[in-house]
Amino acid sequence: SGDDLSLTATEFGVLHYLMRHAGTVISKDDLSRSVLGRRLTPYDRALDVHISHIRKKLAGSETWRNRIQAVRGVGYQLLALR
Image 1 (cartoon, rainbow, N blue to C red):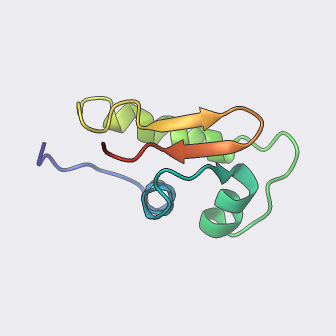
Image 2: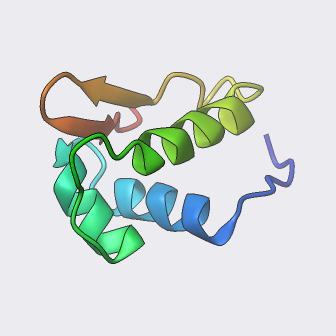
């Protein structure tokens, strides 16, 4: 919509990585290693929290709403524009 979106550096990194791999399911471990610089550990919810914050910030945009999909047991996927 042309509106500015205020993201933290980590949120930007997560969204940028998902955008570069749009349409592909990215494992949580790959996303954590690439963006957070560390392996995902058991019960680590940091990545999920960042995704939640990004989703809330994108909720006002019709184009971006619901584009980040969780793939149960695997990771996340940014749905490509049709």
